[in-house]
Length: 492
Image (cartoon, rainbow, N blue to C red; front, side):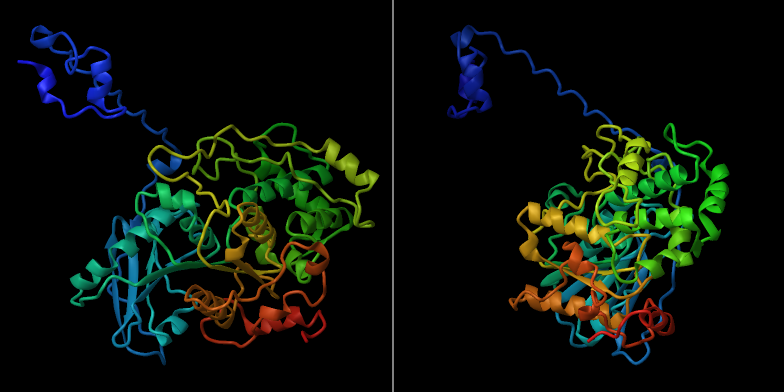
């Protein structure tokens, strides 16, 4: 038998063509040629390394249902568990507009129970005919990869889950995504080209609204590290090696040195840290001083510093990098002074392990990137006084989108409040509504310039998109917001 008869016509770089050139079974020696040896088996792919997060166990909280929204139109509401994640789905009983909104919740801590909640814009969504769905994610901790994958998986199962609950629905004509805090990171990461190419569960989103989001990804952790390094340096307990093994022991001494009343009132030494953090978190701006004295902000920061750079076991090696941080310690001058230079020259610098957060062979990075590489409409919201996920995140996002040529797809808005994610439902609904109208062919909506320092520092900055109309779904107490806003001239 002539083995060449088993080969198709030669093709460039095809197996048989290359084999013929090598006088293999497809080419040479005629019928007396010996069969070519079987090719060696391909080497097995190298397994991914394991991390503490992989060994942690979580249990979804199984619900029997969730209540209707008072005063809203009648809806079908379904709950269940999908791939280890709890979920909620809500669809108007009549008048569904054929579009689906995925809601991504924020950081849920390190406990073993997985819970799911409702979007801040739930009332707006029902009133405008949208269906929405939300996942608990299959893991807690800062596991953005799980958040993207589980949110996408739920979106892909929307129609079949509706059918399982007795309702036949067509595939959504459009799918949007929105979320807060870590959910804002999930929202922004899910629309990135890297996630579109590498996620195991793929969804093509039509637009996104990340709110109070970690849209600078690892830059948030660098900010926390810079805060810690500066606090230690000013307290006379500077870091000399990383990680700081006894940070929990020395933290009370740092606080006692820098605050007269922790966490609300710093002393003269602590005021230097206050100035440093103002610049690390986005620059001088309205509501920073109130954010600095806010117990919630400071408590969240101090609960987030002192780690080893693996982000509590999400990674296997240190990702922190403070080598590019500049510390503005001297509040007496807007420009760099000798005091600033001396402080920056002497402070310890943390360097990351190369590829600590590399692209994985089995899908997304463990901490998915927000590189500004997207091509759908995006509208963001961020409170000015948020120091847990600081306004600086918006400046990082703006720079990355511009570097990729995608700033044409990005609108950003500042909100005059202090707390992390302290939005009114009206602010969130307005951002989402403007985004979907833009996506449908309307004009690009207006936003704030988040990057020009002189603009951000203006006392009226953030007035344009702050909506103080209260509702039961707000993430901020109207009285608290009013007290903060009373420190500034009324918005025009």
